[in-house]
Picture 1: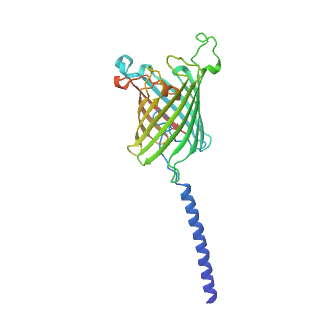
Picture 2 (picture 1 turned 120 degrees about the horizontal axis):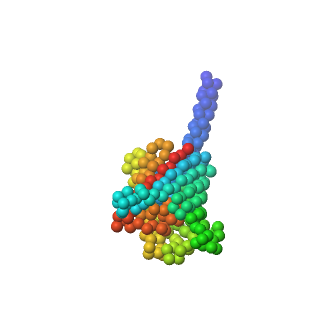
Length: 280
């Protein structure tokens, strides 16, 4: 009987230690899993980059269109006659770093990008923080127009800090300060250096749909251009996210849509388009 009691006590002691170890592991897992997820379902809010990152080894194919202004009606078939296209790919190098490359028909621009996570929203930290860097190569420029043209003159650089917060299950917000530098620019229409601050948000409508909005304010911008204002509708269909876009900026490069928005919403001068992201 004494041996049986000893064995029972020993078993209880082992069980208690095992239970403590298991609870410690569960607590550890819970701490690791407190990050906020799915603040944004798309890599872009509308045209503005979101804090969503591709997972390691994920490939994204990107197809985007911006049609011409709708204000000319049937003369240009509500802008379909003057479409511009973006084709590109994005690769998740790690869970915190992705690299992208795209080609834009507008100004025949090639764009390379890097997106990198700096911090994640959790119970101990209030926001997601992501950096985004791009370099544009304008292949539209000709030496006939610029006899002293060099390769570096074709380059435009953009540096952004993207800060977002998932406020609740249906609402996410972000703010994006940007710095844009052009090696070659038209002093009448553009500044060599420009600072922009944009804000965007996503409101979930259903399990697979959300309404998105973004606005950018440019400091010291030329009068010819407007501040970019865009509205979008996200439609998630399993393997891809389809975004319907209405915007006053036809360009799709970071430097283009932030600083060269020419449409005026008040005069019905805006552009319809879409973004399509397919993940592999």
